[in-house]
Length: 299
Image (tube, rainbow, N blue to C red; front, top):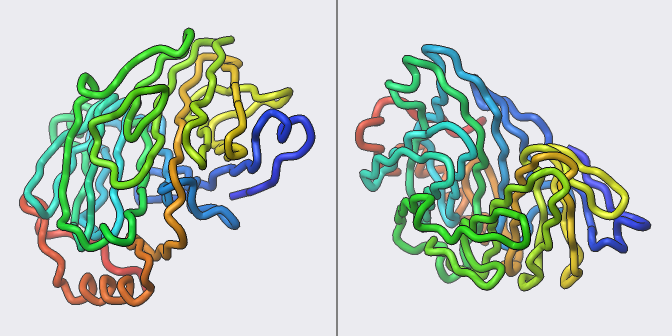
């Protein structure tokens, strides 16, 4: 992963910092790990950001993220292509497809798995999407865990000029998503044809642009897949698609310092140690229908 400060014309165009993701092997497929980054752990409430794919799974292959725990965060699964089967310790069993949102609030503790269904595994399929975590406000870190599925049709879909936008969570461009955010949040999926400009919503104090497909231009520079551009607060920023592209706008209000270790996020190191001990000693609940396998605590 590389992080560099913008300079010259790029800073004048409203870009503060550039982050290039690093490849991580998750067992059978790789992801680009974007956040946390050295010197920039969060953007608004977003503390973790992974981009996976496009991946072509052959017959008999698929995603197998075994049951694992979380505390004091919310996970957001969003797909451009393919399908993932979510199961969790609350008993939810929910496939997610392109444009849908799976929003899981861990609170005081939850366990989930993400796998390819037997039907898709038999035939082979493609998979492309992003997995992100948002930290919870301190007063909400120990709330009861919950899960919500929001089909694509339930999310605000609109145009800003020729840009096609879908609001995944929070508020942007005068719209509000139904997803259950607990702090001011910006999360938008934008589809841009070649040459189409996009004006970045400026209503949130922290904002970033992630290039998930294609390439975009800001000022006189071009940026491709895997680049996160963190923007200057309050700056009027416009980007333009060099080719057919998909970008994500993310950010919101800062929440203050958070600690992150493995799958745990908290404002308290002691709380993370307690969660580690609970997982090590199997005190977290099981995932119905996926009770046998699990990811051991690292180390």
